[in-house]
Amino acid sequence: MPVPQLSHGVLKSLLGAWALAACSADETAAVEAHLTECAPCADEALRLRDAVALLHSERDLDLDPLLRSQVLENCLGRRPARIPVPEWAGPYDAETARLDALLRDIAESEWAAPVRLKWFEGDRPVSRSTTVAGVMGHLLAVDGLVATALGLDDPLHPATDPAPREPGARTDAYWRTADHTHTRCVRGPWREQAHTLVRTVSFAGRGVADLSVPYGNSSLPLRDALLDRAFECWVHAEDIAAAVDYPYEPPSGAHLHRMVDLAARLLPAALADRRRTGLAAPVRGLVEAGAPGRSLHLEIEGAGGGHWFIALDSPAALGSPDHEVAQIALDAEEFCRLVAGHISPTEAAAGQDGDREAIKDVLFAAASLSRM
Image 1 (cartoon, rainbow, N blue to C red):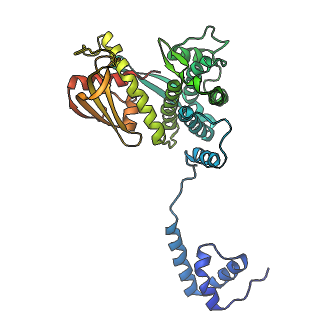
Image 2 (image 1 turned 120 degrees about the horizontal axis):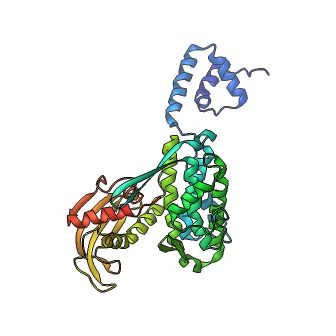
Image 3 (image 1 turned 180 degrees about the vertical axis):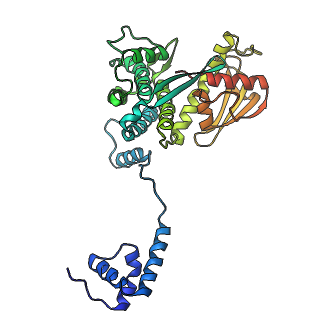
């Protein structure tokens, strides 16, 4: 193909467009042929190409973890879904999708990478060793509590019948019976179960949000149970990401706020449980149910942050700023890692003010919310 013959002035005027890769094929050929013959234009072209490189920041080849939700939001804004995902199920839908994107990227050998699960029991940290595949089996087994509450198949059936209701016991049962605890085979059943849960709650209507989901000796309404599962999905996704050296971001601010709110709402009951076993200070001032009582101000900073007032003496009391005796300030992500049992109460970099006993009790109660 012959190279077009253009004057020096025209070729020089095209150098800027050439540096931006904005020339036509013929113009590009003409400019590049000229650069082999004209030293001043070659120097100018090199300078312009370097300048253009400064206009473009380096970009990671990994897709933005929020890309899926952004695309869906854009699509649904143009054409709303006929059966939308309930707002309260959004964090679970988002966190399972983000974890699935991580799992798609890892190599087969990385499914056997060692992972240490951490949580708190009483006043001490405990841990268990497993693999990436073992973590996914744990998520599959415990998500099964929500599945069975909705009348769906239990991933443990018929290998264990009746299936245990306590999350740790379910995990142990799965690990004993599964024959693929070191391979990616667990990804398909976990992802299918997650899709089925989201579809089921989407089609079930409003009333399903208050359905009771058992967790061992306690229970949560479905809206909180799915939020709890979203929280655990994120925490264990970070465990997996650390094991395979993969970058992983925290949830969106709105979803992180909901996770913090769930933990804050569970703290008064956790305090009462610890008090019954002698692990927290005695009650100082009981009040009638629903009445304001002695409270701790929990200030969570950063994305997902906010202010919560934790009733200290009874789960039935009302937390109130007028009865504040202590304050704790923590970053949202650090608070969540405390709740997950990934950092100890004594290591939490908290801003603390007021009643030291109340502060200690709340920090340890937060850690006690963790489990395998």
